[in-house]
Every structure is written in structure tokens, then in C-alpha cells.
Image (tube, rainbow, N blue to C red; front, side, top):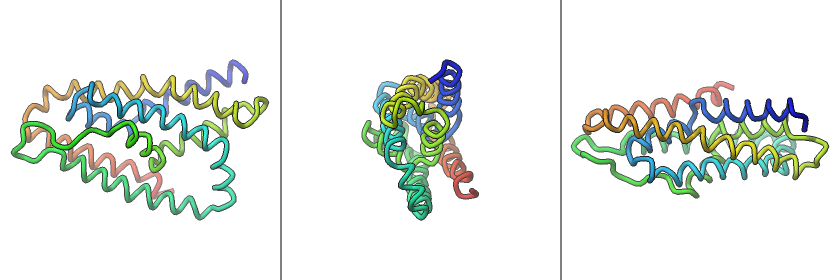
Length: 199
């Protein structure tokens, strides 16, 4: 991998990790509802779960999706259904009369598993492997290099969103404001499905 390609990979990993998407919207909501400390497993699950996904995409899944294109449709349907359910859960995290968030933040394993139904995570993994994996190192090593860059870049990026949620927490001190915030996050999460559904 040349220095220029490495820098391009870091830039892509940073830009795709810090821009709005399902993971970051959920972290913003989690930070606002549960605080930073309780959101840490969610952040780690995203970063390490996506890194694992990148490796698997590089080694196995790209060829499977090329061989069986119908799996793309199946993935889109499952992803859309799961994200609609998550949006409903976020919108209903705080009942109007409550003063504190109900429910629990995502665990490490839930966040890691979510990457497999997250359309943006798939786009990031497939693009990174296709465009930046060094071909001269072999499939496994090339995939591991891309995954390591993503893990190192992704965690600080997603942490910003959880931190922003924590900062919003002061303003969201009333149940009414928190309800409006959670419903807004749910609508944005549903809206993030548009590129997948329109494609």
C-alpha cells in the first residue's frame, strides 16, 4: 500500500465514520438519554463490529454478493425492517410524563450485530475493500489493514456524536424536550434509509 493510498483510506474512513448515518444518530440519542459512560459499549461495538465486518467483506462476502445478487434485495428488506423497529424504539424511549430515559442503551454485541443490517456500514465496508485494500498483500492481510485503519479512525469519530448527545442532555432536561428530540432522531433514522430504498 502506497503512502498516498493509505492517506486516501484514512480520509475515506474518517469522512464516512463522522458524517451522519444510523450509527451516529443512534449514538447522539444514546448520549442524550443515557450519558457517555453507559454509551461506551455501544461505541466500541460499532467500531470493532464494523472492523470485523470489513474483514469478512474482504475475505468472503463480496464474492457471494456477486454470485447471488438476490441477497442484496434480502439484505435491504431486513435492514429496512430492523431500522424501522429501532426508530420506533428511539421515538418511544421516554414517555411524556417521565423525567428520565427508560430502557437500556445498546450493548457491545447489539451494536456489533447492528452493523450487518446497517446500509451505511455495508457501503463503507464494500467501498473500502474495493478501492483501498492492497492487492499485493493477499486478501486476508489487505482486509486486515483496511479494518485496522477503520477501527482506529472510527472510534474517535463516533465518540464525537455520543459526546454531542451528552452536551444536549442539559437542554433536554424536560421530558417534553426529550420526547421531541427522540422523535426527531427516529425520523432522521428512517430518513437515512432513503439512499438504500431509492437506489
